[in-house]
Length: 184
Image (tube, rainbow, N blue to C red; front, side):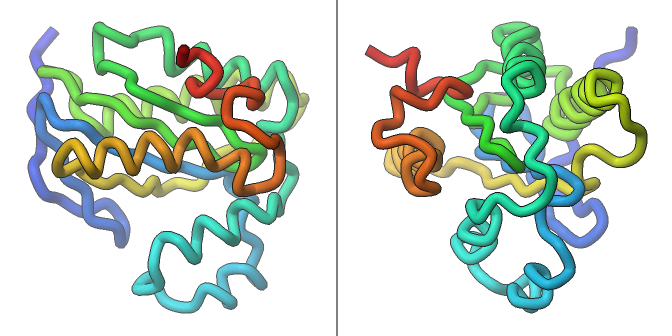
């Protein structure tokens, strides 16, 4: 099998992405129905800060298929399946309609390949379990290159605190679909 190369800065659809080995990435992707037209219209342009988009996602619009334990575990198992082989996981949370993942990209396993693999596999399996067909995940994903230790800590805190901020639990360790409960 031919090694895959990393793309550096590139664009898919309208979002820019940075792909390089041995860098930490903070990635968010969401269910296909998580932002209805009314929510998208409220957000306006793509120039709005990510925090605005995050607040809208945390409202829990759409079918919220990730609220189902079997579907959330399916996604979590997909993240864990190649930890240490294709990437190194640092943190994740599976919200009712979106996910956040913090991981280091490893050689020969570009960012887009890992994210696409997670999305393809989980979409197929989740649709089977739900007895449905069609788009499960939104096509695009949002990623941010983690620049330094402070940015890493802030990203990890955001991931851990997302269920608390959304009003789903009172403490990060109580959220069953993420890495916060594994920390001592």
